[in-house]
Image (cartoon, rainbow, N blue to C red):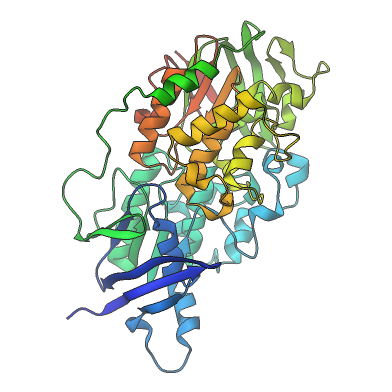
Length: 491
């Protein structure tokens, strides 16, 4: 009989006076590699936290028979042999709470901060060990070793976190939302790497989140809904859980459309980038970019990890200091001709994985959405009647009204992404910059979000949309720009 790695028996967990997963039962045996699935808010991340020891059962039990050895305590062995990779990096050597979002674009503010090399050394990386060098090359981390940790894109950060976990040679590797920020080639390489790890090192995997392709080694699936087990057992050979139902026109959509009127007094040209270059020392990110976007155009901006997509948006949104060293026109005015960063932001709705990553403020979900009216997290005033009506309708449309007074930091990753998407929409801006807004969302929520954009954006609204999945691009998009090695092609 195969050894049981861990077993939950009638387990209930408690975190900050909140009880969840009551009478939960699940057993994982040696040789089984699992994926945990379910819609946003189903409890996937909470289960990962319970497995890692962050939450402890207040009833029932969670046991690890494979750790029952003499000598060293089970707690310290478990800490060594079970590694978790989550969306946020809250390690002792690097935490988003220590930095601010714009710092990743500011060469001066980031100067002297932790490099990727130093970060990995804290996890045991040694360039004299061939296997370590082979790993960082396989993961695509080798070219980033001399970069500051804070300057990595979301996809690059994802690769780094997984590399760090593998370096520590765990028995069980748990990855929460494993495909966040990874482009198509990276997802394929990543799956091949995981298959190789399982085959050669004996690591057992538990992946949690939404997927379209899985490593071949994944053998079992645990499907959750409402913090309860819907099904558990061998992975089905059928197509993964995808919501195929169409999103129908609803009274809520009509009410949102009535409030989402065409923006007034927007210039005919939204922005123009002329021979734009961005570099950090010898590292060239953008090379002679020329791109003009007119009012009402709907664009998809595509490109692989690290190609510079987020950098372009940071120039347009006013977060990148090198905007002043380039010829950039925003809303008909050359950047640096007297307008403030707030003049730019007031006309723009924005969300991105990096904004989410550094969004560590103690706000409720309602306050988070309201903060989109003011372009920062300080709530200057209460929303007026029209603003409050739109906010309520957005919560109703995504069926998240029950989260309004919940702490943003205590909801699931997918729910957080939906809240930040609503935050970008709330002031009905002339320009929407949506950088991978659907990361971490389940298929049904993505369909609703896509449909919402198609229905409410008028011919006066301008959209720039970034995604690594062509299927996520809203139907309203008709123009495409491709970024590769710092060079932009448009069609």
